[in-house]
Length: 143
Ligand code: IDP
Image (cartoon, rainbow, N blue to C red; front, top):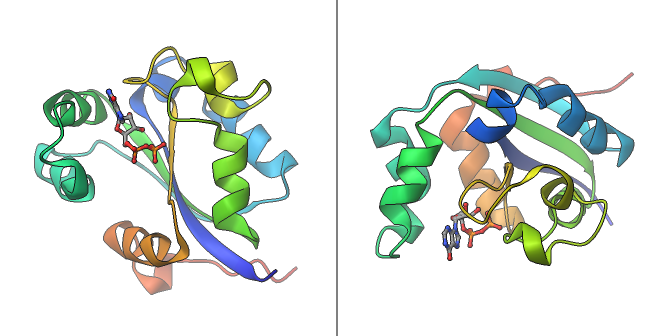
């Protein structure tokens, strides 16, 4: 195992329901550390660029509409095995299939409004982190 970084987005549904802190507590309880964080209202171009891999999928327009419907919280998480660990505590994309006690099981209302994003590989984590943060904005947690 090695120390990794992954990109997390708390989606507009979590922010609208005032559940930012509640979701962050799941992240911190899992031992993941926040090394960068920003609240941001994504533009259409930013959301389309971030989800470009899905642009041919039938749900793309709805996804972009949802992701731009209100502010999100974008974070970089650091820890042992951070990419897989965060995916595990997020739960399955469809909250109906998410394991009990995961973020999506406890906070998401549907596959469209599913509370959070997490990078799905170390390679994509690097690309996604660079999409939102400059290297100088990442704060190593040495203490
Ligand atoms: P992930 O967020 O669990 O990595 P992806 O397959 O990368 O899932 O899809 C990105 C996002 O697109 C999902 O989080 C979800 O919001 C949305 N999405 C994925 N599949 C569907 C679908 O079948 N219907 C509606 N929205 C979907």
